[in-house]
Image (cartoon, rainbow, N blue to C red; front, side, top):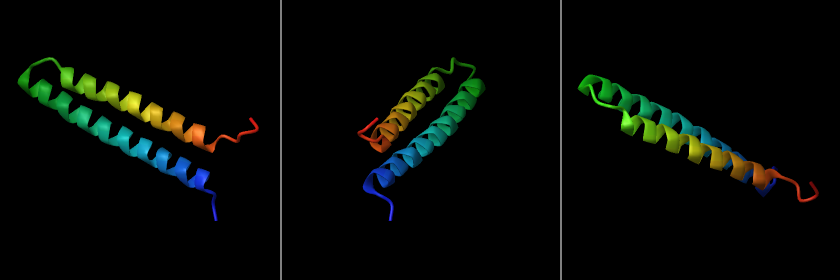
Length: 71
């Protein structure tokens, strides 16, 4: 059976992938709406930036959890 650290790191990794995919799809939808309305895609840029930031933080958290204390 895997250790708790491995399960926690796996959960954070899966959560990062879900956040990244959901944020990219949402950003694409906001971008398409901005094109239809002929406005600036500010919402799409904000969502995309937040997606990158939150996804990166989740990956860093997964790496921090799975790291051995001897390293």
